[in-house]
Every structure is written in C-alpha cells, then in structure tokens.
Length: 129
Image (cartoon, rainbow, N blue to C red; front, side, top):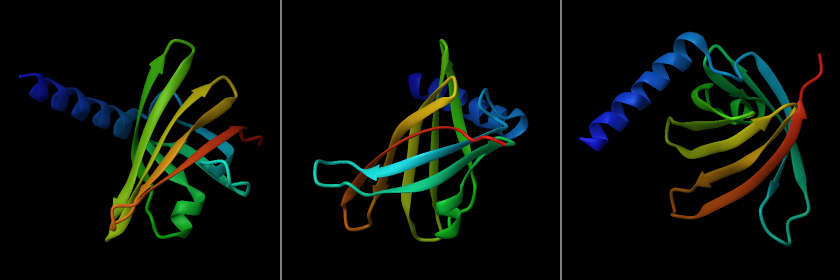
C-alpha cells in the first residue's frame, strides 16, 4: 500500500510540475560544475533554467538531452529539486539540488552503461537579467 501511495504522490507532483511549474519555476541560474574529488581542479560553467515545469540545462541540451520535467519541494526557506535526463540510449544524468534565496547547489550523477558512476558538485547563483 505504501508504494501505491508513493506512486500516486509522485504522479501528482509530476502533473503539478507539468501544469504549473513549481516554487523555482521561472528562474535561471549560473553554476560551476566540478568533478568531485581531491585531484579535480577544473570546472565548467553551466546554465540551469526552470520554466513551465521543465528544467533546461544548456550544456546537456548541447550534448543531445532534451529538457525534462523536474520535481521540486519547498523545505522551509529553501526548495529542493530533482531532474533526470535520459533517453535515446544516452547515459542517465541526475541533477539534485537545493535553492535558498539567490544561491543554488547540489550534485550531478552520471551513471555509465559500463556501471561506472561519476559525481560532480555544482554551486552558483541566480542569473542576472
């Protein structure tokens, strides 16, 4: 019964996001993404846009991923979110994060078909303009 209720609430959340967006809908963010670990010093810039219940991640779109529905939930003064990019035989990419005020941060997980998992961290702020 628990899994049925969980599935129902997940479906309601997805429907809400598709119809109305969420607490962070209509926002854009500039972030730096860096591979997790002591010996990884380089980072790349990325832009995240939440609009119409979908997340558009510029670099991922350039790699062939399409904008995806996102889940968001208010947690006190912050909002947590989750985006799963997948399809067309591409490796699944999960963006999980938290927005609080004008700051954003979280983790990107890329699950390779070979079983390897790459973890990245991202931080940033609300995009100006």
